[in-house]
Image (cartoon, rainbow, N blue to C red; front, top):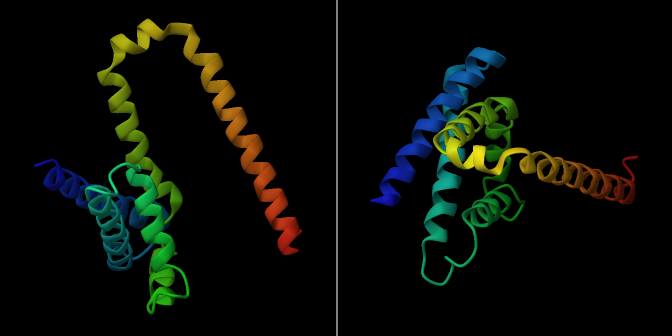
Length: 149
């Protein structure tokens, strides 16, 4: 049952993102839906791969990323079409339902959040700072290596 629930939620989030993409970024609803169908299929394939017996030791996000990288690479026959379609989806339109879900998840565990109290602040600052610094460092090295900057 968990698989059907997850697939239903993927489709529901895809519809919400398509609506947000159309309203917030003035992208045609049909184009948004086409792009989100592709993204939902990529996510569903990655999720289903993560449920296979030998592959379930690694997180779902890894398998979704592998599928997305494969279908957008030149090895895949329709990579140009997929890139053109998904390029129309705004990152902020995708982040909105994800952040809303995160807010609901935190609200559900409010007692745990209260018990953690002030200790969450330095931990989150360290995580955010480390993520930002290392992402910036990797971007700087990569862009310098590629000759972009």
